[in-house]
Amino acid sequence: METWKLVLLYLAWLFASGAIAVIFGVFAGEILWFLGIVELDDGAYRVVVDVVVAISFVLLALTPWFLRHRLMRDEEVG
Image (cartoon, rainbow, N blue to C red; front, top):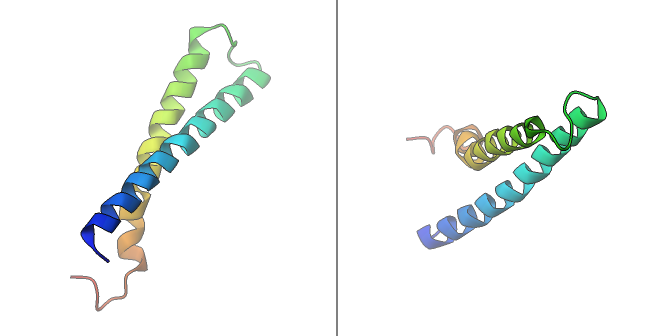
């Protein structure tokens, strides 16, 4: 596959990773609010959401690199 296509696909993946990470962060914050661990008007809610978003985004952004070696055939690995 041509390099520019790979770059374009990875940029699309980064955009999708950001959107998914925000969903994970809000979902984690809402679960902790529902359990009574954090309050919506408290700064802890924002910290939880921000931390989960950051960690999720990094993990999702690196997923293609993690899977690359796993999905390649043995003769393709250099």
